[in-house]
Length: 606
Image 1 (cartoon, rainbow, N blue to C red):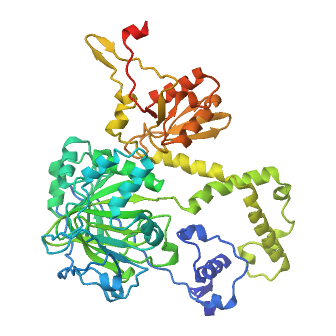
Image 2: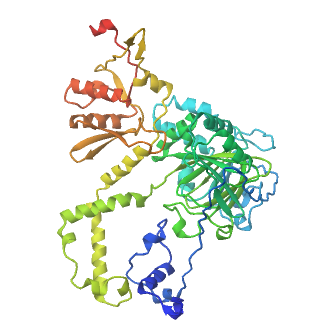
Image 3: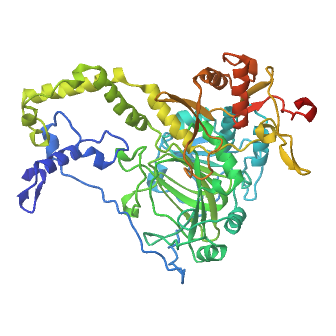
């Protein structure tokens, strides 16, 4: 043990500590799994030469700070970053490697200059040349208002999502993004067009939200600083009133608005469409940073991040994951010290109209130029949506089924297995250990025969339906749904409350993926998203029980989308059942009709 460096204070450590040290000295193979979950890992053998390696634990410091005094609100101003401004080189190539496309707005590190194309992409969007104020070539695309208006004319909501995503990352194609960039490397798209994302969110909109809504410190808004290597949060209790919030900002504090979709209808609409592209919840935070300051310490996140610069500019540095366990992690990191993270692989000034993407696990930090503030919105997705998350639901169910159906899983363990198995027997040279391990591995492999994969996927789907934002209806969707029926109180009486489906009424679901059927015990439940809250998980999942004779009809509607079908084509036992199902789903806001339903007149009711 002396040669391994595992003698502490002159006394040998425990066998368990030795085992942990030996495991830590092996090359890491498990991505994104916390150290705690690996400590009790089991392996069959360890080569003797690996035992000589000394344990080296990275030092990660998570800083916490005392609450900031709401009286003075005078934090130390963060140390300003040094910037080297150079003229942006004008080139017509769309996609280039980091070696010849590194942003010249800041001086990149020596390591960043050496990065290969497969590690970082910088995209200069200049297919439609137009001279910008700084002499660069700008990317002139459709405005956000025009894009959203055009999307309203697309019948298939999945196509809407794809079109919106293509606009968001233009000129990169979706195919190139998901095959070459997604979960692999950071990418910066520079447009030289500060108006590109205009209308999504603004400082004026942020001010309106403060004035008109009950924004709470620590719940909806964080006040932060990062100075001299120290990250602090300065949230007082209570409502975030404009006078207090803008005083913090004036004194150098960054403002992070959590879940802006709860307050801003444009962000809500944007994310509710985009979530269909990913089949996963899309969230967002906005970050307003004063000139010459930094609000957050270097860290990595557990989400795929799309940083959309809305106003001003920000100096960004992005770093590779420090080790294999930080690649596509399941959990976000704490705050890192500058000396822990090495040199950036991408360093650039991101300006209004640009978008910066980096996968989960890539460390990042951003600071403002001394002469201009920054406002950006980070759109995020794919939190807890990896194969491991699916298997976490699948394997326990597989084991339960296997134990119930296969006697081999119920046979007793060997009488003497405690004598040669366990951490204290890790180094024992005993044939019984080999047999025990082989038997265990055989049973694990056999679990696949009992895996209820569709049921596990349904559990993930149920979580997604709960996470989803409710849809923002287009004008056509509203007019052709229950929301367009002009039922009202007028002239002292209720008016226009009766509409009637006919057998030839053509219907379809409101959106793709807004409903899903689940079997729970002896019941069939229909989960849906249209009544979800704009605030994440503010309410319980929405569902109702359906009659078994209606299951086929609902599945028919799901698989027919986006085509309209007649009511009498629903696979139900009778016309009455067909009309009852169509009427029920229409009144729940889940169906639209090809032609608006007209209220019946009093003469028609007689």
